[in-house]
Length: 580
Image 1: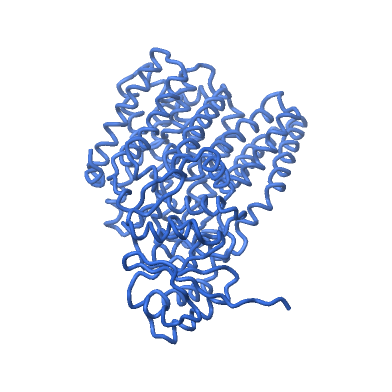
Image 2: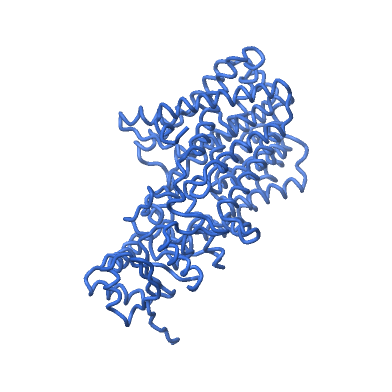
């Protein structure tokens, strides 16, 4: 089905429902014939792999694919910590440790960044499903409800036809920002690091429940708790807060038992977790170094923003609440068999939802905490759906189909995206190259002949990808193919997500504008004089004859190195710095 059709909210919802019902029918059918867990794993991997196989645009560009590739290229250049690819000369104030893993795969195998991400995502999905299945062992004895709970945790425990909701609420001026985090399956078909966070979150839940509710709280388990928190802080610090919320919720429930053995267990688990967080802390602090306070997490003080979040929670949780209310006896019986563990998970869910409600962060990053809560919600949904399977199978297919529809619709939309990446870029081995031959000639020369710490003054957002060098500043005006591979407007990356100082951003943009737009000679000279003092080599890509003529008029500051069509590559002659 062409992606243009799926962009229509009604067509998208219809396709999502059809695929959701089909998936639910197959899922329940396999449960009835007692298919092994490996069959379900193979089908899940196949669904995600189809996106990558059918659509080069989504595999290469994803949503922020070019952005993540630019970070990997900085690491491959030998820069660690990597400099900001969108604001050269500064450290990257963004979690970059996962990109080190990607860079290692790229360097070791010769694969492109996108194919390396495919391998990581499929491996992460396998591990996440295995861990979710292991977690369900604390709540279910039979294999069938365990598989069902695992499927609902990853494929979805809510009904949220986003585009229909968006179409409806826009008429009333209400903005719904679901942020693409529910169901968590979505994140395993994007170029991002959240799958690592999912793995560590579920692993932490398993380990904490083992410590608090079994007799297996030995030194090995506490070492695993320490390692899980440590890795989370290093690789995906967003999830570190989710781990703390889970620990706080489960710990408070455990302490409510008021027994001395439980107090010792909570204390030991808390110490192990705190030590892991403390040892991981230097890297997250490095991530946020240089960020402005306005781009950090803070309390949600805006009443309208808080009301929007409450509306989101109501829309997301209401289908699950209705399912539980329709099967009160089943839920009650399940609760009676696992009261302490259910209370712990429920407390963790509530803590994560409250975090999302009361904390706001850059780029609505707090929505990821709610996504972790919905993973746990699959445990609550499974008993009711499993009861329907045995008593009213047709209704079970309908309910599960509604819940699965969001994830299946997302996979369908991604698989059917138009293949337009070839109009912008193509892969050669491990690197992305510009599709336009003149740009490719310039950028390939830059990548192969300039110092690795060189910085580009360029109007093209993709200069940091094709040239594999950092940009002096990401310019706000150039939008290539609707920001393919970037998604966000250029200004948002450095202003909000990286949290750079506004004054420095404005200064750099003023210099770039003067050089690239063919401004008056005096403005060009002042900008070149400033760049000549920079502590890194600077190269300029001029795209317009007027601008090139202005730059050529200052031979004491610039030298033309290469020409390709209308493009000209200049090097800024730097002022020699003599030691004092």
